[in-house]
Image (cartoon, rainbow, N blue to C red; front, side, top):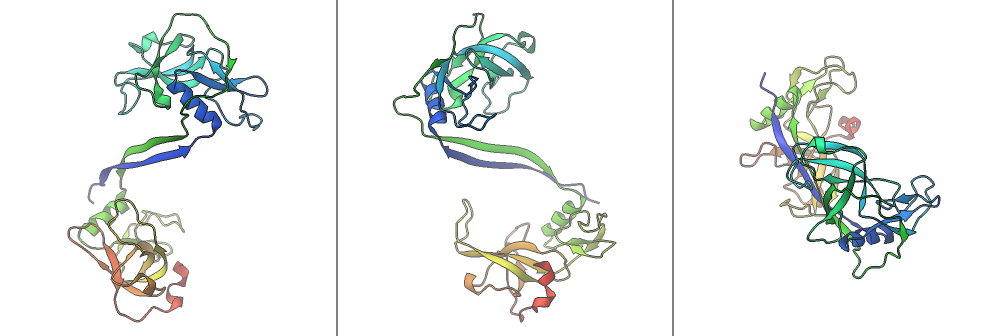
Length: 314
């Protein structure tokens, strides 16, 4: 049995959203070294501000200015900062209740070591040298030995050149480990073989194999080699070009039931105009170069399969 395969994977995309009047005022205020909150109907001051009261769901627009100093309510030490975190050296994640606020703001605290951090300690904002209207305009918090200095005061939220949208990169890095069944499947693809597994109870063949039968709930260990030809069961026409994908639109993506399989896999259909793809069309895989999976499936020229032979796989 080969060793289970592993691979580092990264999911990354830009997240962009427009801002309403409350969030726009908050982020623009940070650019101007002003921290704004919003006052709820019951008098609580929420920082960061919310557009709707989390208790009553009422819309709230009553902006107030709070101090750039506050008190740590809880914290956790981060001994090994990740890339793009606020500080490159060890620091504490803290929840800070700014003076004049009733809720806490999550940010980083620059402290020499974990022993220097405690609940109830006083801190203040350290502003970034370059500010552009984002939460990163607060570079971090730093220890502060002063008293409570400020109560929330009304603010109209008006600033020149207000920030109206927010763009933030979203990124997730992780290591994926294939199980026994997927490792065998991927090793087969490297040899240009499509491998599946058969359930010992209901005898269905699953491609790609899952390691267990979703119907019976028992392990699947018996190998099976369906295909390589198959039948188009359903399909869709793609008219939007994906970033980084060198395929002209429109093209067809289909569910294909390989001969002898009881689960349809999905793949691109090529070698035929998109408007000639149809349910029941017989197709075969096309491998290119050193690709580890079929590049696409193309028509075999055989007569279309009868609907009753694949209708249970729709």
